[in-house]
Image 1 (cartoon, one colour):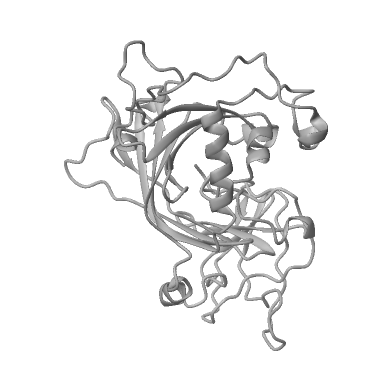
Image 2: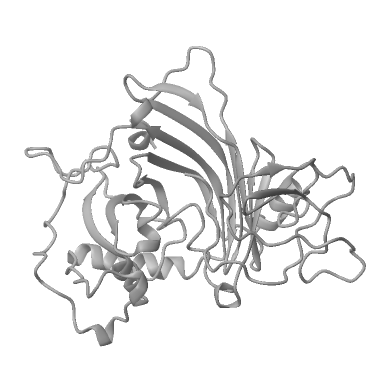
Length: 355
């Protein structure tokens, strides 16, 4: 999408006198009626259950939304409920204002309901003479990462230093829709949940009214830790995002641009197997398991739910995926490594791919 590649920082308010009907993530003009007065509130909380108190601001007031946005959220939920699989390409642009640096990575994603997915992100080399999409910024190579969710555990790979983290999902989080993948808003969410989790605002439509820009300010601590503001350019035909822009608490701006998204494609599994053989059982050869303040060699262990006979030693679950420490030699075994056996839960919050 051209609007995301323009690279201008998101302004939450439209400029006065700007023509209606030209909304984008970098040019958020407002079309239609403005958001209703913030003093108005929704019906009683009994009809709209709130998230857990410890993860929510004390007694927050939920603003009454623009009727157009209410309708869009309901339609988004209806379309999302029919999704069985998603496959597409994505580009990630990270803008680090402090150093005036732009980093670019590209890759593919394969997500399937209720709780399986694979996201591959490959650093894009900087071609000779290439320039950043923002004035006075320097273009640099991004990072290469992988994120795999089996439904029972999450594996996060750092391809640059050949390490990986493992997080066992608690039983309560298994079988849930994969809305909390590192590509936010891609699967959508239920309308009531969206209104509970975010302060939402309809920013405007594009020229031909085929896409709408929605601003989302997180209410919950778990979301605010990842980003302080989000902007979603939603395709109104497929009801999946064309692009998402995130501002994190450290001031880093990340833009995800999605392309060629296939919904419920009949060739989904065949393409997965052609590319990866078994997409959810990657080879761990040469990777080091990162556990708290130590990095351990990867072991070839029996995957959860596999047939008896796949032998191997058990890898410990991570309690601090971000921890770094001493590094041991990579696994020298030439056999195909399977994902570690699920044994116990280390954390209720799965690690997220770097933005």
